[in-house]
Length: 155
Image 1: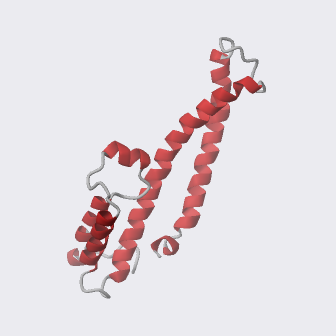
Image 2: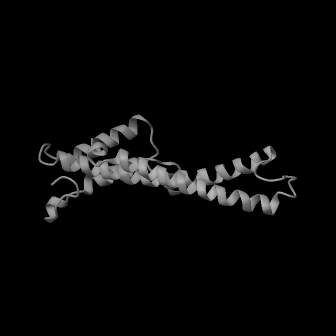
Image 3: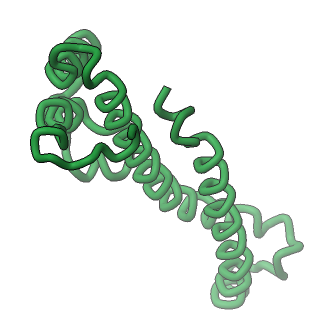
């Protein structure tokens, strides 16, 4: 529900579109440089040569890997916002929404055998959701009401 209420679908589509545009431009600029530098030694005539396809695929792989880390970071940010939204929506409805949230994520992690302490490099490169440990920590520590602060999303 948080993704819908916070317009994450449209923001995500806009962000992905911007990243794809930047990557296509970088690929366009880089393939010419790559072929100018190594094309003669690889016996390539230019971009229009079918033999240049592996060089183009190498660039797509390199830029795609970098883009996946960027997109996963953005996805984790949106998931964190949705989790905060859920805590704010359930505040006042449930006796202790943070504890209920923590228990549900803990049970989820146990059922699907999630690594409770994954390698931070793996998290940065491959995780598109926050770790279960991070989500449980958010659930038990997010409480702006006790400090007299307004919630972020639900007013």
